[in-house]
Length: 261
Image (cartoon, rainbow, N blue to C red; front, side, top):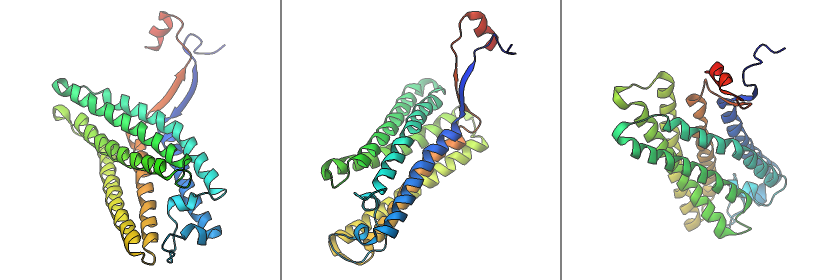
């Protein structure tokens, strides 16, 4: 006989930090593998540009391109990480909306909804630009990329706003873990935005002046943008450190529910 026979049975339990870790490791591995493999095995093809000048690093799209197995590894890892990311987007919505702000609650809830929607759209756009390459359809690939970056920044900014707003209302102070999470969110957002603007500068220099190595500088900035984006989403480890996702068998009657409560 089971000791807790009268209680609902736990079917599945996993810590949210573990879900977050999986969603971060997969794209980090995919990026590192594709770039490294392309440098070792497809160096000339992956660093070749329309200018035909020397470059020492491939961009992410060039490292993946139509090369095998890079394209398979990238698409598989992005697909696998999307499930946990969608789940985290919904968990974050609940995380934010459990806080009530009185008269400002409607505006707060709206920002929380927009933040979660932009998070979900960011993931969908990443899937789109991963499975439709620039060589397949440049216009659609470009649209997905713009959508991805725009939604990523909307999500980052709104998350920081509602995170601080909700957790400092009525004179409340951020806890140590909340302060740490908020600090890293600001740092990683600043790095991401600053390096993205630098990447755009190098891209413009490359397109207009075709200088040696400039496209590689752009590519290196791309890597930092990707890893800082992953790091930002990884701050969920701090936000949900003691929490787990639990699936239980349904409660059959009210007496069982009373025992649980």
